[in-house]
Image (tube, rainbow, N blue to C red; front, side):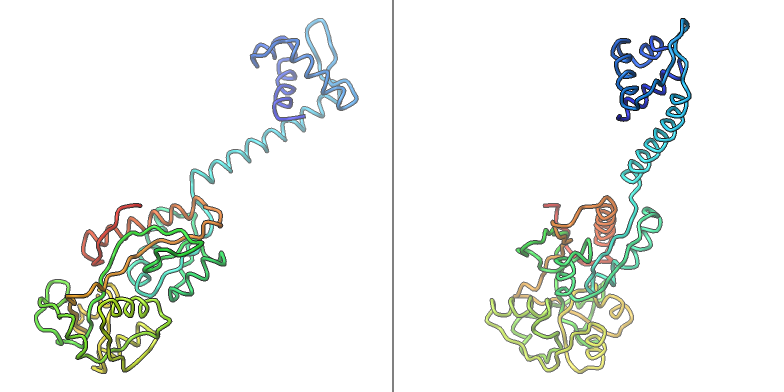
Length: 316
């Protein structure tokens, strides 16, 4: 017995006539009669008593009608709830963000999602890129942002922008600045040899990028302090213990507050890609798609109004 048979059975009871029920259902009367006979055979009892005026439900028929009505209501409710899930995103979405991305996107994403995705619970997890990659591979998060993620095996990437690393020093280190707090005069690549640097350890994604670009230019830096902490790095630089290389987003507040200064470096490519990354082996939920779309739009808006100094990349 399937849903169609149940609905047809209920219609016979409502019409008290097989002929009228067949007419309303748009099926042939003999076909509907055969369906009823098969139901009676399945239950081993008569469900309707035939009269000169039509049909009348037996006690067994009335009982089945009550159950059928309950079952059909439950099926309709289930269908509506499942379809509503597709119409209105809901559920949990874990998002992994590196420290810099978390600084510019974490709070705005949560605030915007509260308005536009009220049934989606977003869990923002901040970590280093290597940890975020492992979480993706283990299926512990649905979505992550990674830098220089091209060519990662077993993960799908969508590059959204490229941002450039700046030479970062203590307040006033590079002279006159523009509206973004960046020196109007860039530093030439050979001058990098004259600075003492505070950088993350060699296993850190940012350090790997820097070393790769330095190797291409046959250049090496004097690294006096290694520390895998963005906050501590900025404190050390502000204390005039060295210089570092960071994107504008990581030092925006410190530049505005006069705690740090920054300059572009000419003669070397210190840009990196920024990408949304997923594990294609994980199910793609409507909620995670909506969260990614929202995050993408927020980042585009930040580029457009200057809150994030990056170059947008068209969808690939």
